[in-house]
Image 1 (spheres, rainbow, N blue to C red):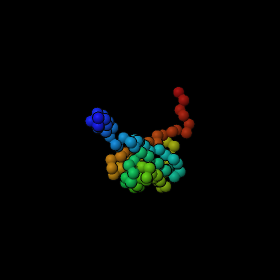
Image 2 (cartoon, rainbow, N blue to C red):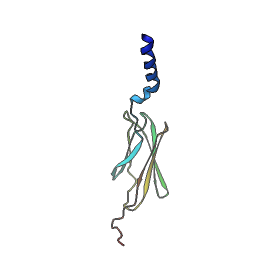
Image 3 (tube, helix red, strand yellow):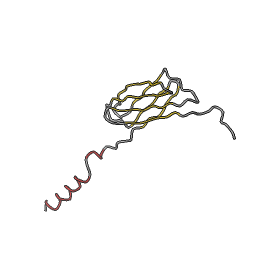
Image 4 (cartoon, rainbow, N blue to C red):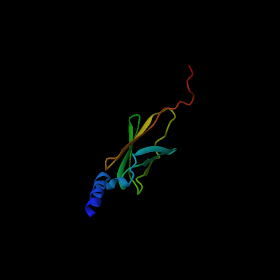
Length: 114
């Protein structure tokens, strides 16, 4: 009798890995403020050291943070002025392989009409 129930349970254990019990989100970045520029990262590995690399024109600013218990972090760039028509990007690279990217694109104050 136990053989009939043990085999299906063993098959289920092989099909459903234990790692699937926790839902892992894809790492993302978004700006929570532009004065000062504040970037929030989510979906990173818990305790992961993350390098947030901001690029504007040819200048680079690096901020190193550690993802908290929920896999999130906040990086502030107080010396970076966000201008309406300047493009900047922030790339976050984690020590455990997580990566995400955020881009702030040019938004003209007065749209050009044809």
